[in-house]
Length: 102
Image (cartoon, rainbow, N blue to C red; front, side, top):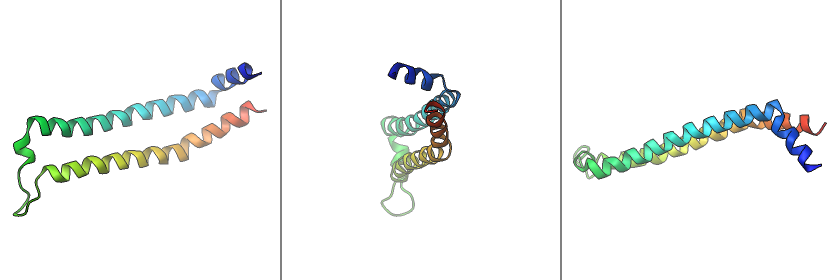
């Protein structure tokens, strides 16, 4: 019984579409996050004078807002994934459940 259910889910067109869209989005967002994080770390490792430049006459350097930007970027791509999941992936999941349980 369970093998039959697994086969029906795996071959359902909405599941195949869901799997493809979710995987593709996951890879792109992962790549974006890795580029942001490692880009910042590479700047820290290889261009410290750039990051140490002061912004204005205070104590804030270029590195501080860039570090905050990496954190904010991570929050934004997480928000984007959740939004896509709620609008696109959840309806596909419901289609799979309804189609398989008939």
